[in-house]
Image (cartoon, rainbow, N blue to C red):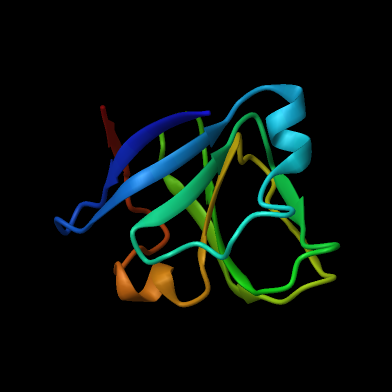
Length: 114
């Protein structure tokens, strides 16, 4: 699985973003994986909706368009729930509370570095 670094407009960074961009990786997502730390995230692309069926922990879901603009944030999505965003082409899954901790808000443009 590829890894990359995400930077927010306010200078915050998530230093270990796992990229799920194949059918198998998108299907599996975070199922069976350890909870994310505050320095980790999972980018699922293409994607405009998620579910937490089978999950054991809550997530923050950041919906992005093709230009990496934050369209919507679903905070603290508990297990056995779902969420979607019209117009999203990618989803960034973060540990619950991390979108607030990293000060990510709708309208932000996130940048990716290697």
